[in-house]
Image 1: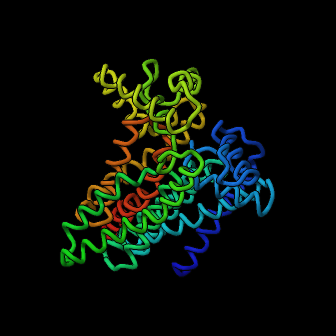
Image 2 (image 1 turned 90 degrees about the vertical axis):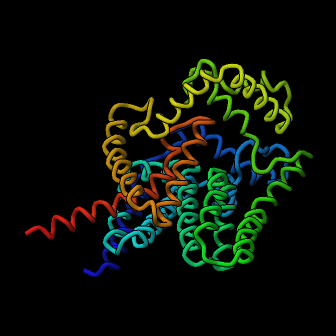
Image 3 (image 1 turned 30 degrees about the vertical axis):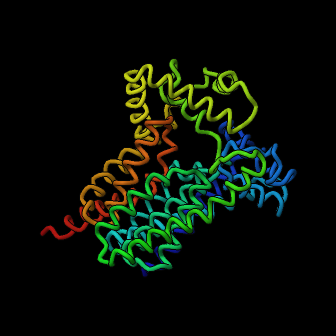
Length: 390
């Protein structure tokens, strides 16, 4: 069997696994976020994106995706889950591509296999949450980053900036990562300074062209400057609550406290006011916030999902622990290559980001996806060494 046949078989298996799980889901019962995303998608359809009642609380891209599905096919949740299964399968192919860049075809196939069967990726493809779309866009961003690093053409700069921009409209986690990547690329690139500056400006310019139309939309409905969304205050509140542990605690009514602190219904004003109050809490008790940040780092890299049933946590721990261990080891060994360096920067940025705000195991999924490639590289190295033994 050729490697192409193995790849197509693997992708077919990944798709069937995700579609099969998605068909077992009937209601929006996995999290309150599912209900909120579903309502946002329906609101975009019913009211239009320029209606003030659609708000600015969440980044828009996943809600717009749902709205496009609902407008075209009606409120068909099964079809949404099938499309998300296709997204997951496309991501599986991209992980194969990334694995081939790190090693050879064997590494690519092994990496895609890890992604295909990883329980968290299968699970989130079947629920109405932004994670599957975010992982897809983050993976494309990472692959395009490596392409840009290797072939620093204007076209690749445009692609890189555009994909990171789309990813930011899904969830702006890559925005802190981008300047670090560009800084290290600048240091290692052999282009002339003028050419380097032109590439950097191209990346940033296309990024702005993707994001700023939504910023203009936010200004149209609120007369205030909101780059993407107004959830800075609530994210800081969850992560710095005096009685919390740095993760979302269902025993705490964050929304009621948020509205009390905000003392206004104006979205952007409320967001800034709550963020300012929480920052005062942090300044007043820096050691407590530091302790919470350490807890959040633990939760971010936890191999299980706090609060879930023991069976789910056992499955998560058995799958996450080997991937994280092997993936981080492979990343360290690849640190002198663009793939390794870009991944280290992503790990650092996302870890710090969730230490500042709040953490959950699912927030780490974009990293887990990319870690499949260095984890596969380690495994293939071991298999080859065992095969060479007399």
